[in-house]
Image 1 (cartoon, rainbow, N blue to C red):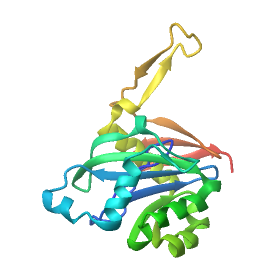
Image 2: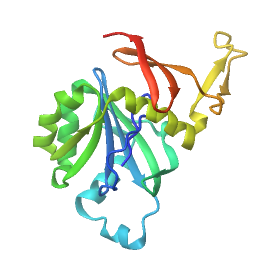
Image 3: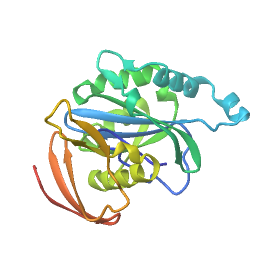
Image 4: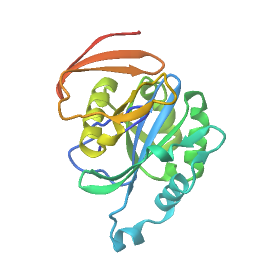
Length: 219
């Protein structure tokens, strides 16, 4: 499984073999939890017939609305279509909610049957350690933890391959009349500097997909 998340699309390989669906990824930051859900669109008739019970309930709940409780939001405008992950074709849905509302997310997950599905979720961020025990005990989910910055760089290359239109910059950003969005050419990418701004800030110098270094930021 691969994982994408949050303000930046983050990708990490979870294993060499595809785990059973559903596939989730999480970035549990100090302020926001960013959840990505992979919705397969290439399911056969037999697979669709087999999608019963908890799996069907979870899928319907996540994709049939854009708000979950008072704080959870699905950013419909950010979804990525026709993405290929581990040989499956589908849609990536991006959901976010305040980290302070993690207990609400856990209650929603339990109420929609996730507790009955033994599953592993790829996760990054400090909250992956902070909430690991609670998520395992309450929702029966194991967190497969990945390095946050490594996932960030993988995510940039994932966007480059599958949805390069997500990379752009603004021309004349301070002039309302002239301001316009311009596509950024990713073909001549290296070297480049990544500034990742969340509850904390990290700046990374990137020379290749496997050669990057955090050069400064907040602690």
